[in-house]
Amino acid sequence: MKQGQVLAQYCLRQDLDKTQMDLISIEQLKADAIIGIYKKERITPQPIIIDMDLFFQANQAAVTDSINYALDYHVICKEIHEFVSQSQFQLIETLAEAIVQRLWLNPLILKIKLKVSKPEALKPMAANVSLTLHRTRN
Image (cartoon, rainbow, N blue to C red; front, side):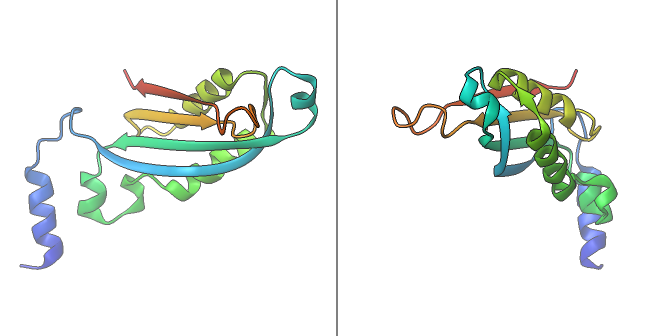
């Protein structure tokens, strides 16, 4: 039996309920954005760092070896980077929730853990300020 057939049989035997989730992690996606409530922040873009844990079911992608059933992390990064770079929110909370809403456009994503950081917001008092959201699709 070929290796692909063994994998296919194994994956097809697995219980594919919604509690079984796999994870793609994207770490330190960087973009510059206008974000903040202070005058300087409204004029000068500042670095934003995004960490995403995207939960989905990878079984079908593993069986088919097809990107059609996988999370295309290259496309996700490109879309989120472009969105953040063009955004002009006042609050990190608003930006984070907007990113989550964009991620939900991908029907394969079942759960999201998203961390948005503003590493220069509190310099020199603190090295970073961040917000982490945890969201699960209904």
